[in-house]
Image 1: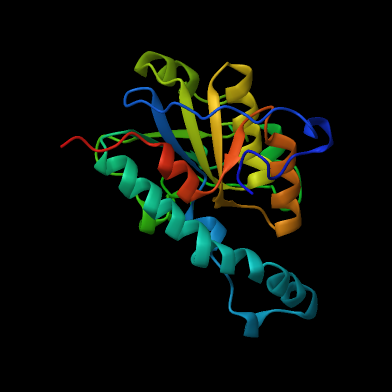
Image 2: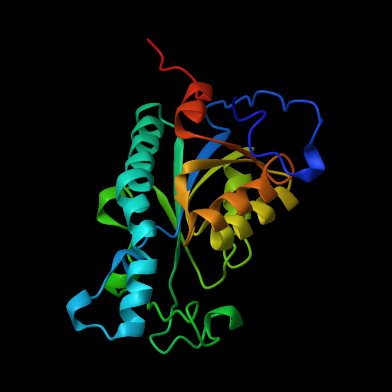
Length: 233
């Protein structure tokens, strides 16, 4: 089994295998989405009430996947892209005003997605384990899609990028919204399965099945690295 035959939805049963992507230097970029401090911040479970403690434990598999799989694979991809001189970009959720008035409606509704992340706060910064380096582009958004709320489409087009490799969180929310927007703008998109996470594996796997072969090709880190251009001499 490989990415060409895995994760097929009902729509693509029996369809021909997708072609191998051609990832050339200057035309492929890595886009790391919303890997920010706020999502790994956890309270002391000893201070929590019964309901909050249940929610704490419900999120434990996500944190285990982040530390055990997603962060290490993002580090591998960043190291490889940087070594090969390929473009690396980041997207993060952050509002320009401290009161959050500039946020989109989806980030003002009550509940889990009610995000107030002023751009200079520690919570809104990208995880130190994968911090951007000097010269790497970081776009700031108050939307799920990294294209809708930023000039990212123009930036990618100006740079000559045709293929965008997407990683990050959450698979079923900001990653998915970004991937669909990129596809609608005729970018070729690859989603790296083991470099992404959703709140649960069920949500993660379900969303990848929806994305695969229509909005993106979905593969794992090793498969993606195998398509990157070889280092010169």
